[in-house]
Length: 70
Image (cartoon, rainbow, N blue to C red; front, side, top):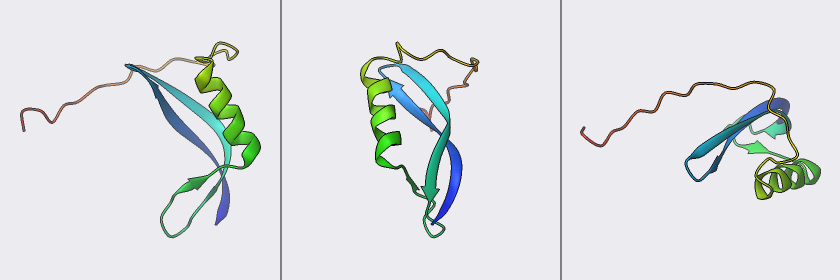
């Protein structure tokens, strides 16, 4: 395990929100990200409230691809 600052995507219906600056521990074997209890609670609260208490620092345009016809 090693400490890192990561980002994660959280889907709310058809909307995706990107949260960055998250302190985490990353497994060197599988690359899974682990958060401490405080970080997990903060992410859960943000998601449950629909990010109402958060102000976006920027917005991104995200391309969407489909494998439907392949």
